[in-house]
Length: 367
Image (cartoon, rainbow, N blue to C red; front, side, top):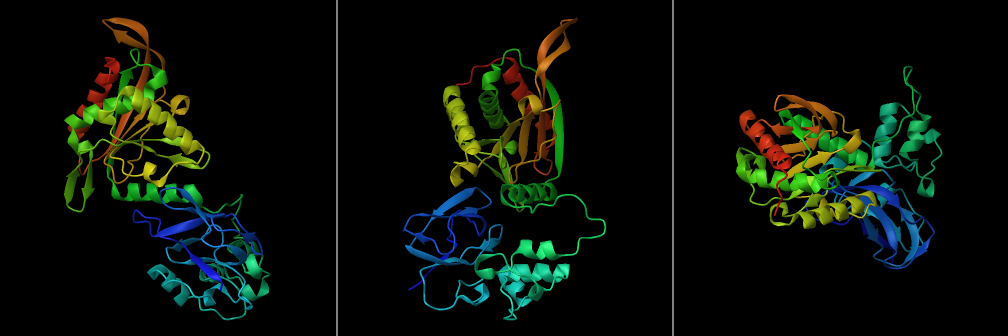
């Protein structure tokens, strides 16, 4: 009997996933627990092993497609029946958006293409019957359709589908920009008393201590309620080849500086190597970001929804400043705080920013 593998429930409210990369191909013989597919969710990329052994009979979802949990992805094991279009294969109950797509894209039985590809073909005016599919079992892919579409008169430049981590970043940033009325406050900071090799963990510790004084910045807005959080799980931004990730350091307030430093290094390395676990990317209460030498004078960072605040560090450099009536050279950088003005008033946000700066400038040794 053939085994139909469906996109599993990956937990934490994840309702859909993008097929990032197939690790097998049609006709390949695989064993149980062999790597099968990489799935990108709104949290991370997960490698899923095969739950069954046998020959890969059909791959029903192409790389780059986003499908709901319960969708049949692949059939393992020959069944002796000539494979039909993917739409005819038994599969889980479709999600509402999938039903809508199929309602406007009935299978005419002449070509083999998914409802999504049929919809794109109609939008671009491409006749599917005129195409030769390059997908599994001769299926017509989205790339086939777009390649056959007449280019618009003013179209130019190389085009690349928005997918993977970049697609998730785009969706997340769009939501944050749409839902959060942001304000950014900026002030300079003298980093003479800061060990710049420990800049991120020191800033995380300073922020966690200041958040205790300003609980509205360690909160979330849920409906018509402000939820004040009693944990200090802080995210920090890490640039990777796949895009910006924000792993989370738990219990920053109660951990020593050495422990926070070690955790920051571990998580940053895992992020760059693609080894972060889903739980290491969620549940943050506040975020910190620093781009080092690339940071510029300062930034206006976007709040990491559903948080209400994010603190960023600009480039630290030797600059002339006035101290005790004299011009001296000090390592100066700008601290910027973007906050959700629905939850945080400007005066309170400024006071929080100054509290963080005060801890950094005075070289307080965090517990």
